[in-house]
Amino acid sequence: MDIKTVGSIGYVREGHDVLSFQIGSTTTSPVEAIFNNTNNNLTGPVLMQVDGYSILLKGRLNNEPEDIEALISGNSELPELIEKQIRLLYGVGPRCYQEHFDEGTGKLTRKWAKQPEIDEMFDDWEVKGMEHSAEDTLLQIIRRYYYHEEFYPKFHFSLSRLLSDEVIRSLNLQPPMFGFELVENNRTRLASRRQIDMFQDDFEEKDFDTVFVGNWNYGLTRRFKRYKKFKLSKARANRYSIGHYKNDAVGSIYGVNKLYKGSRDWILGANSTPKDLNSFFKNFFGAKVHIIIPDAWCESKKLMLQKYCEINAKRKVDGKEYLTVNGIEVGETYHEHLFTLYANAEVKKLMTFLSGAENQGKAFISYSFRTGDKEEERWRFEEVDLKQKDHVDSRLDFHKRAQEVLLAAKGIDASISNITKDGIISKSGADLLYNYIIYLMMNRPIAERLCMKPYNDMIRVNKPHLYKQGWRWGLYTDVPARQEETSPKDRTKNQQP
Image 1 (cartoon, rainbow, N blue to C red):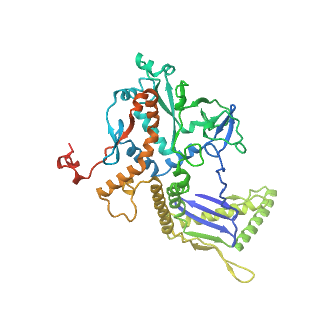
Image 2 (cartoon, rainbow, N blue to C red; image 1 turned 90 degrees about the horizontal axis):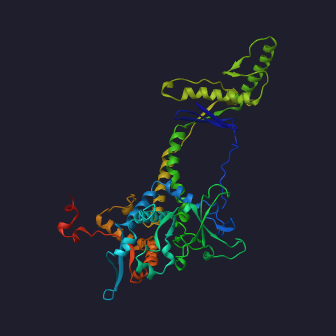
Image 3 (cartoon, rainbow, N blue to C red; image 1 turned 60 degrees about the vertical axis):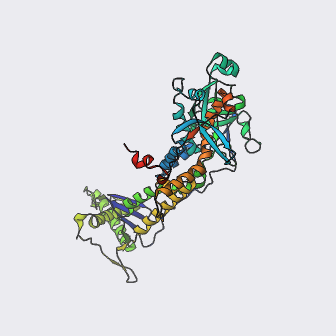
């Protein structure tokens, strides 16, 4: 049994049964809910000085990447929604292509084909010293894009970077860039050699030409690795450089997760729903009775305890043991804590009669009191209408609305996400196909362009002649056709082994 009091109010819990109580007819709780409404976002970028560099922080507390990851991972739908986006974007994987414009139809199409030089360049990265293959690194990039809308590849160059392309081809040497690996967002910060006063100086993205990599979680006394930020105009200048690829955001040098910025409160509310309901069922479902202990009873027991203290003082002189009340050692001197202990013991005694299946039919006895106005004061038991159904329904309705907001923010129709939505009647394959095609047309191009840019930059650096011919690495997706538009032998049901 657990009993806790705050001032003159409290509660006692026995298993799943909870009773609240107050001492006295009127009470004011000393506890007030304090909500911190401080705005955590300053009006502009925040800088700090490290090792003579001006470091551009990520968020006011420099922990925005960790906050985003914790917020998303703590949601019941977002991680799987993002995984669906990753699968939709990745398709069957990266392939070489050239774009062609058909003047007759006025359409831009891709011609997918093998290109041996490019295919060889992206093969065997692990043999060349990279931690992951080109395809695995691409999946990492796509995932970081959907979490942070920016990512940081670390490019590795060989000594051939110092030679011209003609010499490299004539001697059949290894290309200047032989691969790259992804650096986690929470380890990277942009830096400038300028001593920038963020309140007075004017600065822009091009001032931050250095990337600091390290542990930003514990103080400022630690070691960082410094790299030049990758630029195509100076691609071969350094053995290692780190690129910064982002989905541009107004007013920010870093990439910004629009979902995090615009729907953060909805995500927090959705994340809290399971905890709120679990807490409700555990702590409040049994709190159906509120006990009011009358002032007259309190005063009577205080006088009783004072008398016991006087008796114990005499017993001490006589060499006798102290008397106890409700298992409480009263002692010789009265203090208010004695009454608190006595009242708690009475409430616990009451709890043993009101809770538990073995106590059915038992009775709890107390005395009533008469005030000077001949009014009766006695223990009162008031039934509490918790409105459990209203509370649960309101939380579930909020959660459904939060789901709708997140789906809208992600641009994913409910038929694709597999999240049910009230009012949706048709779940036909045609609806799913059309929504799938619309999603690809609306959401895929920008995401693919950004996530594939490091690979196409690698083609541009290593194979400039092929880049000029229009060769690119892209993500191939085989969009399924409607079954009635497919020949019988090629339909899905006839493709099963």
